[in-house]
Length: 205
Image (tube, rainbow, N blue to C red; front, side, top):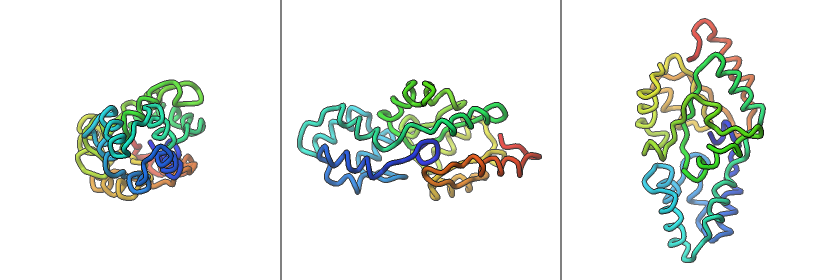
């Protein structure tokens, strides 16, 4: 999700977590793979309540839940409408799945109408979501890819995997996916359209 569908604002998240007392936020928060309890919540090792409690313990003071949630949400922007519209066009011809390292605080927001400018939750745009904390594993590990492939029934050789992390993309390639590396904030529509056109005789599922 982050870096492809929604822009990632790592520096803003670091700033906001520092503002509520997380001095080592720059070490804990990463655009692709968090550390410490920030990784634990994404891997499903701890839930949101435990994350908030442990964060307060590490900081040494009580932090309002609302402030923690606000800091987490600052790491991403509301997605651009043109990207969401393009997903809806793709869904007319292909199955779309989301595979994301994510946490319950952000996904609770993404599953509400506040996610999109048109008032649709993220589930409106995909056939199914595969989220790290729900699957108890994270990218770039093989386990999360194996679980997605098994559950969805997709054939990697007939599928296009879009990613902003080179490490995650390399794991996908090891499974035989066609891949496309994009940059955070990039308008990737023409790039994706060109790949689909190139393989129109062997359509991406």
